[in-house]
Length: 295
Image 1: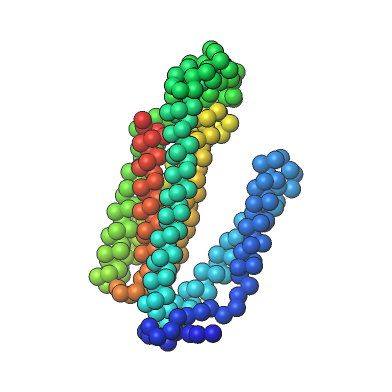
Image 2: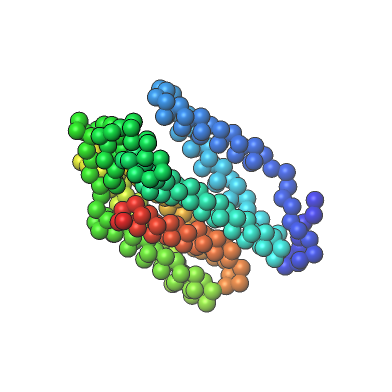
């Protein structure tokens, strides 16, 4: 196996044989099996899902720890750094496509299928299926699919908790930018403070979203099964919340590494990668706020 010398571009580091990819496959299979069992009401589903999550977090701890040790040992050169950057860019691109699919589903439902069911557009013949249905947005669609007997539900006002969460994420985007500039200029005290503020704002965002979900579920009749609006609302905001949680955890890891003296003004791609991811999460939320909550 070829190992790059510290600070050299003559070789490319190849890691030693690892069982972690196999362990990761087992973790993901257990997680998906547990999720499927839970959604289908199996009694053992919750236990399998919990085991899958525990295995997955163990995988992250072991694999990321190994990468950090290799990096601190000076095994990575500029060529490896470029490959990491390309990998992160492709990863974020895949995440963009992931959310584009959900935004596309929202567009299709709102601008095409719902008007068709109401008698508008090129496929207005579909209105024969539910002649009493009146197209409009937000809607649960034809039929009574909400927890309320009359089929009604209420939406969450944009300029309430969602606006607060928007302010939180935008502020966190500013704090991580300040932290990045502090790292590049060698001001590690400012770096640690503003990086901590960033992940704290992320966790506060998650807390506010949990409050919002509880209010929607219990008081507004807005649940995952509340027709097309409920499914698109919870899928978009729920997956975004999952990404915020993952990003906040990564920020905590980077903060702990900063406390241990890792990173230099010239070599800190792990920090940059998490910052890229966090800015991506910010941009996605702006789209959610505009197209899900506001317009």
